[in-house]
Image 1 (cartoon, one colour):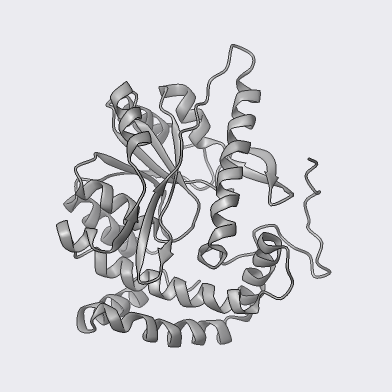
Image 2 (cartoon, rainbow, N blue to C red):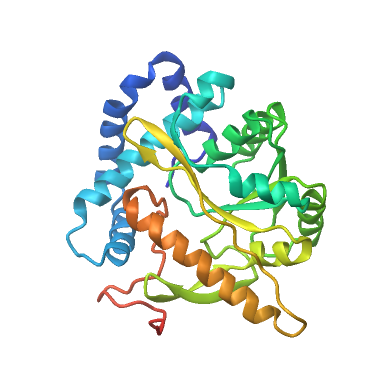
Length: 304
């Protein structure tokens, strides 16, 4: 979206140093409005995505709200990188039980936390690390290397591991690192709805046949760790950290493909519930389903 580079993050960080958090929303309203007006192609993509998610055509207020809340999100991301302990936890107003995560760790196989690009997913990892959980983040490198260095510095300070994967390859070394982290009974965090890998599964997602990444499923089957859907939406002035029941990927020999497809379909269903609940916090600033100008999708409609 043009925000995620070293120069823009420098100015956002400077703003969050000089300005108290209660003033973030009015500033974000102005910035978000500016981006909404200037970035016409991105605006069209967000509109197309929201029309699919909501099933409505009149989504313009949600389009604007997406730009606005994304601006708040980035102010909070830069702020929370300087916060620890009570000050960091104060950004969270509502917490679901950590029982699914604690049960998984008690079983000794680690846990895989998967979120869509919804809300402030960075706060989820930092918040858990701040509570003493051992976190590893499976992520892509950003084009701006200084952004990678900034993220690495913050994560190293919080004892968060980071494992880089290649956008266009299976990244065998990264897979080995990820499985080893799970075998140490640690937590692996990744984002799970964008097709950015070489391994995907076609499932129904908002009624459309959609290729979703299957990496979490393969890691689960290799380690025995469950996949736990997690979400960190903005609710009013602060965030909620929400954790759903785990999804286990297991199947007899010769049935792995069916088990993976069934599990990813369940995960897609959980994602749909939360994206429908917080549609203006689903931050995909590109045409997710590649909607054609006439309103049709380049992918066939999913059946059932």
